[in-house]
Length: 146
Image 1 (cartoon, rainbow, N blue to C red):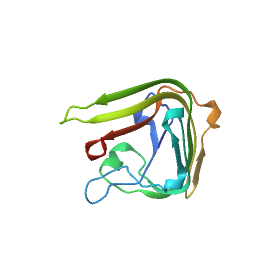
Image 2 (cartoon, rainbow, N blue to C red):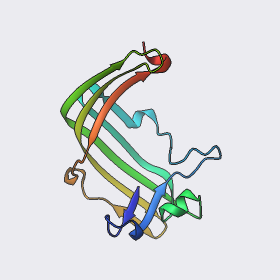
Image 3 (cartoon, rainbow, N blue to C red):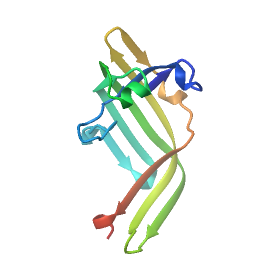
């Protein structure tokens, strides 16, 4: 999650909250408990709610990619996918690219906050969000295809 003084100008970035880069090169990924996610792809609904997740604030993208100096921080967020728009089912049974999925385009709302020493941020309420694109999906491929 990032904060900018001007969202159209990437040079105005003030904060870059992310979990860092693992020794194996995996970056910006963190496991959250299963109970924090509730998904119903067929209904086009999902919710992900996390409180006080440990994060680092790298200040800007370049510093984050270099795994440079950071401050300890915590983030919380509540993301909701709701109000289905369209649903598409895809299936590719080609033996080399087996894939099937149910994809439901939806509306989504997000509310989030971040805290670190000397700084705290709270977004506007979730219902003030505007959706550019959101989707809830269930897919199977590889050994899970059948």
